[in-house]
Amino acid sequence: MPHNRHIERWCRVESNENGCETRTCCTMTGKSAARESKSAKLEESLSEGRRVLEVEARAVEALISRLDDQFVKAVDVLVRCKGKVVVSGMGKSGLIGQKIAATLASTGTSSFFLHPAEGVHGDLGMLARRDVLVAISNSGETQELLQLLPFVKRLGIPVISMTGRMSSTLAKNSDVTLDVSVAEEACPMGLAPTASTTATLALGDALAVALLQKREFKAEDFARFHPGGSLGRRLLVKVKDLMHADPEIPIVQGTVGGMAAMLEMTAKKLGMTTVVDQDGALLGVITDGDVRRFIQRGTDLLNVTAKELATPNPKSIGPDELAAKAVEMMERFSITTLVVTEDGRAIQGVVHLHDLLKNGIV
Image 1 (cartoon, rainbow, N blue to C red):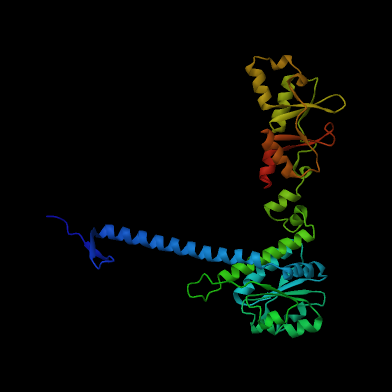
Image 2: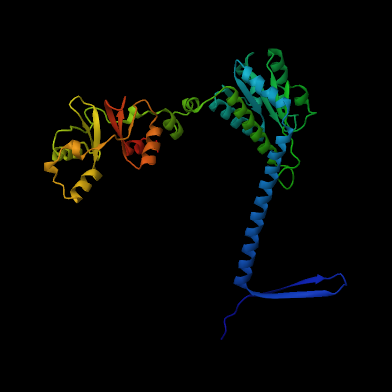
């Protein structure tokens, strides 16, 4: 007997301009119908995701044409600030404000976030006369934020507002007002802050980057505020911090035999040895690869000197160079070790790729 199967049948009726109807019917099994339903849901989610990103992209793009002398003035006020940049906002605006404050702090501007509700309940003592307040409110009517203004005005603290309503109370009571209004929110109900918070965040980044350029903030400065991360290590750690120094340097005189050089390589476990003259000046290096190539050619290591085995003019680096530069040189020349020298002659140490890997430089 045939198995019972769920069968789904649907029809679509379409009318043309003459009023004639066309009926299209389709019959699917239960599995086919489920697959069609799943596919439709996936496409619906993708379509909605793309719509949201398009709305928010348009919101950010619209800011470009609105940048004017108010933005320039805001940057100048922040550059001249002798105290701290205090960022404040409620709800989603507050969360965006926290990120803006963090970005400013990490790029050389002393900054922190002040919750406006906490501010009016005792934390206003965190504000001082030399500070600047960056107030964020899409409506410009957030009561907790407006309650800060009388105190701020009494201290003579400049106010930079970021708002979506240029006629709002906040805008009217600010020294500088930045327009972060959007044509629409990505939320289909127009309620959840989406495009507006994205636009505010983007404008905050624009302020921070314009400010760091005014301050001539460099990568080395950035690293000082990020000592714990991989970026900090790449920009702060120097070759001398990771190199193998005495007594770990593999080193032989150029007059010793090839076998003695190989024993030194084995003992120091760096896959190479430096070769020096009688004054200790660098003549070259011998690597595992050099030894293998000599053996393949039938050379007897007992009958050659270290100087004859060595590759002259090896790649070297100074001890005060960044470890990141050592990585770049190793990648460029396809090598795993660099001799560390002060002047290309006097050996200070040897740095190996493994040391750079272990310390998170790569």
